[in-house]
Amino acid sequence: MVRTVLAGAVIAALAACGSTSDSRNPAQMSNEALYAQAKNEIASSTWIDALRTLERLQARDPFSVFAQQAMLETAYVHWRDSNPTEALATLDRFQRQFPNHPATDYALYLRGLVNFNENLGFLARFTDQKLSERDPKSARESFDAFKELATRFPDSVYTPDAIDRMNFLVNALAEYEVHVARYYLRRGAPLAAINRAQFAVKTYQTAPALEEALAIMVIAYDELKQPELAKDAQRVLDKNFPNSGKVAAVRKVEQPRWWSPF
Image (cartoon, rainbow, N blue to C red; front, side, top):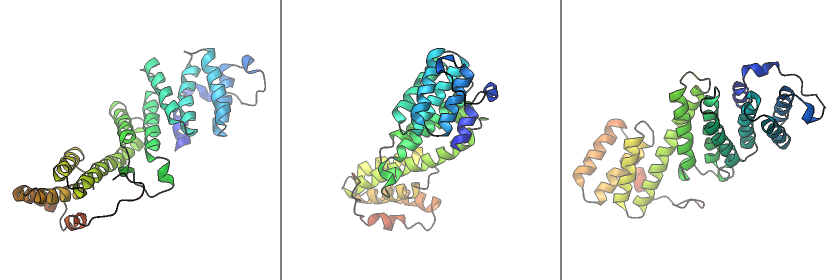
């Protein structure tokens, strides 16, 4: 998918670029040859060499078609080289300088990917920590980038994958709100739990996590001695999730995992 993404961003005119076997002094190489060299370095994952070549290409003629494309490739290389901060900064510069660029859809898609992968986090590689149990800032920024892509460029080749990722992120963001609501409930703050659960129900209406959000509302209203409101929440739960056992499940207090602040 990543190689398809990168290939899709390449301007059609660049297809005629020659071989990267050119061993001449870079200062004497054409823009086409430099770009082709950078592409070979990217394909072989030699990120430092690729960045050096791309920077040389941009410095030579900042507003040429090759330099514009090189800026996008630079963002991609930073992302692949585990440097999301630089990747996003490069994308910011690209969108400021070239707001109507033909590859804007790719720039938005790449922004979404950078934040999407950043949100998965380093710690998650070594634990079973869920996306919903960490700061959702990157997830929201990823969702916003994918949403802008899907809205502005519905026919883009990147839009179908962006929509799939948006669906995943909606579920994760809903789970995060439910996770926080559960935290408040366990610590004797039923009103705060209701507020977070209600936000999840109103904002993420199709997410599976809403079953638990409604169950939390039933329990929290019971604790607040609001039987009518508890019955209303129970009716909504029963209507949307028949035979749900979430209320009983939520009443069981789970021990927090070692890495969780909750």
